Image (cartoon, rainbow, N blue to C red; front, side, top):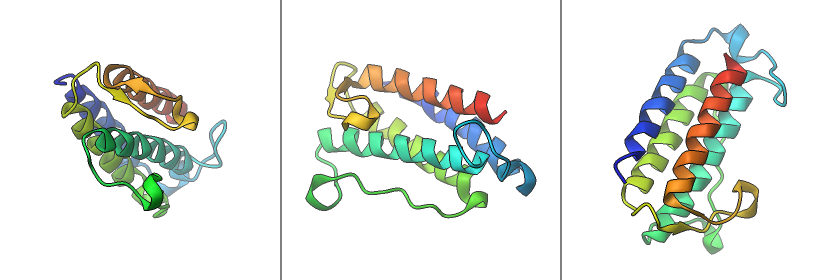
Length: 134
């Protein structure tokens, strides 16, 4: 799915914004999150869980009992890097799937979706987080 490269590009741009934020902005609260860094981590965790679900479709590794592995909190200064890693993982997983492939996302991520729909959701979430943390 070649369009997955667009996800990597927008995630990298947002990750760069987080990497360049001073501590005061990273730790500043935004609606729904105690800090911008926490908002970035929440997005990174959703992207990572979606990537793991997409990788599982192609026979990739999963956590214990098939459950997604939790993305760790490495601190405010790692938020940009964590976001980049999760976004690039999802973009790579989606690139390996045909657009109509069904990805069995867990309920908290919206339930099963085609790879194409998952890409659209991820792009929307990145844009929403960018607007929230602007």
